[in-house]
Length: 186
Image (cartoon, rainbow, N blue to C red; front, side):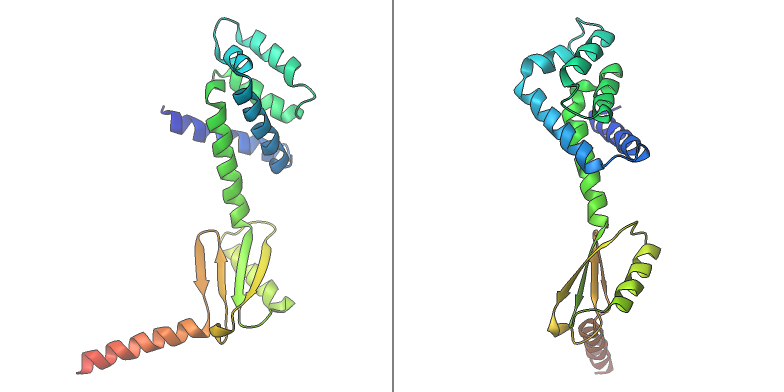
């Protein structure tokens, strides 16, 4: 299995464990990033963790002593698990991938609604229902931007998608259709 596949697999497993433990993923991620920086700044500690001159059990025991109080039990369990599985050498890549997964999920919860006028609660609720049908999960953070050039309707942006329900877009489509019809009739 390639290093890329390993980091993705272990990051996804860590993400699942954090969610199952109902821990605040942003806090656990911050701790893991701090530990990653600690490993980068303390080459002796990192070298000890990846060398095979000590047993896994010894490395886990010392890691628990060194990091207890520095991070949560969950972060400590994740690190000890990686030592046990012999994957601590890709810890930095796993944390980077975990951060990517977190940012990806956070982006799915942010929705930008561009309208010509501020939206009211009924429109807000209708859009919330529509987005849930499209797979946007849980609590959604709405941001309403005002763009009077839209004339009417709205543009909804979330994750890597954009849904354009604006009158401006409809008029552009109508214009293209008429122009192509005029060219075909000549």
